[in-house]
Image 1 (cartoon, one colour):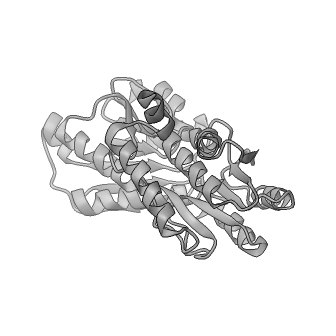
Image 2: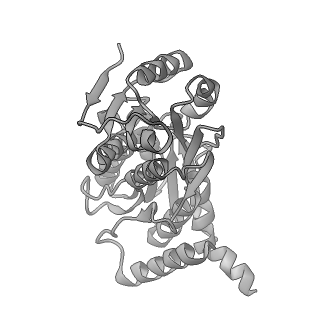
Length: 319
């Protein structure tokens, strides 16, 4: 049985549609896993709670919604509860929302990290390439062995692909390994890959999966390796081990989407967010990162936020 969480605040009722109807913000959230199982899910939950706090929204949350039948039932239940802004917290919901939206004209559907567009469907997209690129640069700089690795969930993650590009731009001789768990939450696979690669002298890892990153950091600490964390600042897991983390500020996307919806400016289609929008950033550096490294890393990140060009692109223009 799917868990259904309901948090309500008193709203001012409205007799009119359009602008007044949007002022009656009733938010739904669909999650593929329990809130506590993934950092990504926790971020989504905190995002809708922020809407409750900032906009007096009613909030409805359903966990463990993973296929079309479950999603269709969840949307029907949300509609009966009066939801008018529905977040599907993941790319899995994009296609399903496109199949369901026409029957629910009073709901604006929002999914994440997958292109989706219809009259009442939008997608909020974290541009993950640059954060992976910068993670690769830092990993290449910090490696003593000359062998670094990324442990990702799926090969389609842009940050996974970019990790090697950033590392090799910074150090053409660096050895970069990659392993995919094919799951966001498979801690056993992630820890196993970390052990395998540490045995091959990999000494800096980018653990690009929020459901397994913490377990991988703990194992890296035991192996004497460094890690770049994922989604949230993971330095608390092992301050000496974590060099930085690539942060995705999920709450900012929720606030932006809800504010645009209330103002009538939430357009259908894809909305992209990156360093320039302050939706992505790097967490404070750990003690293992020297001041000189921090300075040039901050410089390249700031430059990218200002002009949208990664270091190799800026170099090509200069040449």
